[in-house]
Image (cartoon, rainbow, N blue to C red; front, side):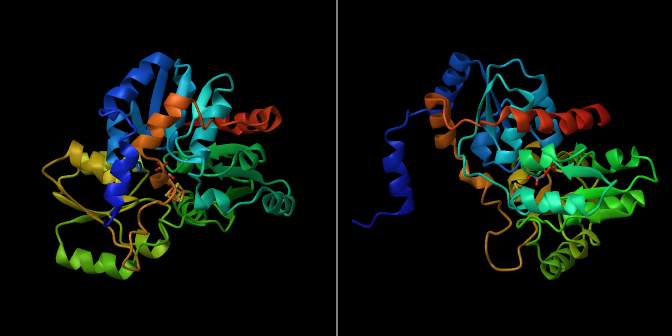
Length: 322
Ligand code: 13P
Ligand code: SF4
């Protein structure tokens, strides 16, 4: 018999409850759990989540929750941030391998040397980094508050911005500040093809181009609007336009279509004919793994108390300054 991927998936599924959504709802009550999901998660996960948001919204929810268990449908650095804020809660990540190329582009030892080479600089780190990098930082920021945070720092203060060079360059342009940039980037936002986006705009002249600031400058310069995932979502709702070319991970289109079903959302294409605009890390989480994580209360995020305490300070500073 020819076994297709879907046959394999169904075979595995036969050991799962018939109604996975209902089973997850039951486990949520049993554990007093909250499910937090990023917009880049698959639609089923977004639909079962108690809260869907961008990195800032998710950390604010994690800071405020009174649930005993946080099920984090996102990537490792996001779940880790929830654990830093909630040391006594169980924080579950459906797939512990759901990492982030941007966070991985900033190894702690090399960053420590970079920091030492720029004494007297304040370190502002994008939340897409490991707890070890957060512990070496003065303030954390996300794509929705980075400009606001840098604008609050005295003008004569030197600033290191890590790890995303593209967001750093964008923040530098917006604030007029000379930032010392760490050369990190996101594999997903680097993959968009300027040529194909321009071609799409010719085919859909009525469409607005909207982009995440993690994109490269040659893509950002064509954008009618630049913002975090939440900001992009709000913009599509408020804009008079009926069509958008979306230069960020296409998982967010699920919420865009829910919020404005009459509008058209066209995912910006990658350079190669691949699905490289989908984040391979985010997509490791599935509804089945989320169910198993809740049922078995594993895999959980753990952290040394020393790193956690050091990483907490710059996150708290961000929450105060946002
Ligand atoms: P935001 O959700 O803060 O816009 O960031 C997007 C992202 O790259 C998450 O990995
Ligand atoms: Fe990391 Fe990029 Fe995936 Fe976001 S989209 S989790 S920055 S690899």
